[in-house]
Amino acid sequence: MMDNAFDEMEGSRIQSIVRQDDYWQINTNEFTLNIFNPFMCVCYNTQLVSVNEENKDFYVNQIVTNVIFEDGKSLLLELGSKLKLYVSLTEDDYTTPEALSLHYETGEIIVI
Image (cartoon, rainbow, N blue to C red; front, side, top):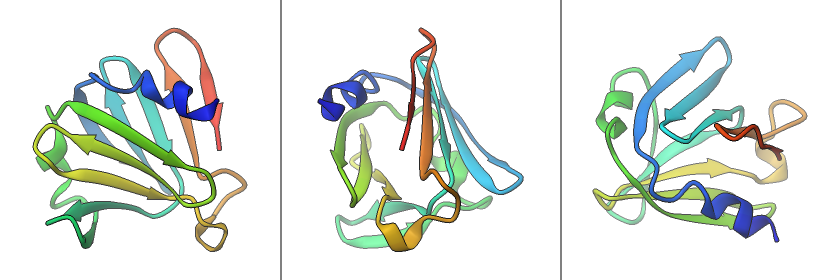
């Protein structure tokens, strides 16, 4: 059931990735994703690289082509450039009561 909620992210274009105080925010034309847990890029299909101020703009204008949600493990956004943005959902990586909050332009909100 939860997978379907994330499917609506597909086809969205990343407009910005911004560091807000203690979390990251991905803004697209269809949703805003606030990320409180570790947030990385999967490069070359295996290497995890932290998203940071130096590389965050590399993902702007990328299209979300696929979303893979694994409860208790991760949320993976596959981009048109074959890059993948990874949010850890493991219990050990929670730094706040929620790992992320997803806000659709339609008003729907999902908190994990």
